[in-house]
Image (tube, rainbow, N blue to C red; front, side, top):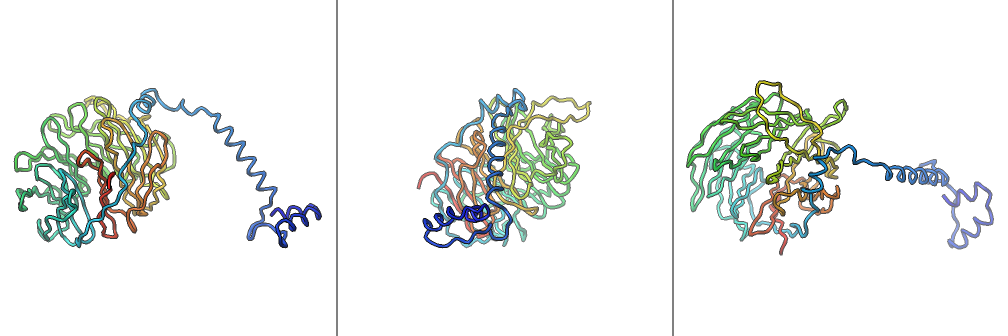
Length: 421
């Protein structure tokens, strides 16, 4: 392109000197397949630098409410290092992992061929494996309850309360939903252990584990097709956050006097009249101690998932008033650089290195790559290949006082990521 510029402007001697120093003949032409000239490229560069200068001079802080800025200043920290990065592949023949859960040093796994297995995280060995433990049905979700107890949620909508010590035992089964269970999570509040389940039948249910039994507490019908849920303890109450398809509002409910009550809707899009449409696909809630919990949401944005972090507002029981919509609660709205399409299922997890602080979010990618988002600097700071193809499941836990990341993929690999070798 330089030769083209010299020839076009009749700088013949300069062109000869240019070719002499280059050591061979240069054909004066524009870039192949384009009509872009050297002058146009330089003009574009000058315009870009001017635009960048003006952008740096803008004061964008004015859009943040005072309480949001306080959260960023006081509760969001840089990505703690080191973080889990050393891979430990498990030697197994289980098949494709459908669901995974971790508690008390045990990794519970279910597969597409109706197997159920338990792995010891310390030895990284499969210590129990069986087929059809709840019948000829795939286990859609595993909910660890602690003390050797767990819930196995079948594709048929049944929930089985099970116990594993030296042998596997089913304590009770309930038909929680008429159709497939979308998600199920557990939370202990005031020494009561609750399980929240969401089904394709549009029912959101709260169950309680009492001794060796499952007790139904409350249920509510969710309008629209729900896609994900998150649970947290806040001000002594069980709080449930529900995300729905084709809806940028989160439903926030509380268990009040053992009854599920809709409290408010939480906006993920403060541009109220924007034409941009997306859905929440994954929710993980960070307990912030005495401060309001932070809700991390993985979205359906294409071609890259976005991460939106919002703060929960205090619950004020006003059942006689219309359900309010809470806006201006967005703490962060970032691209994750994790590619996805309309069939993807976003998977995100808060880090657990620093209690009561937002120290970053793990992004489990469709491209087989695990990414770590530093919320203080608004960027990806950790990125490593984890699986050959899509990552199906992930979990972040504290094991032996150290952070542990677990991933499974369509390559049928199960990988434990630790800080130490």
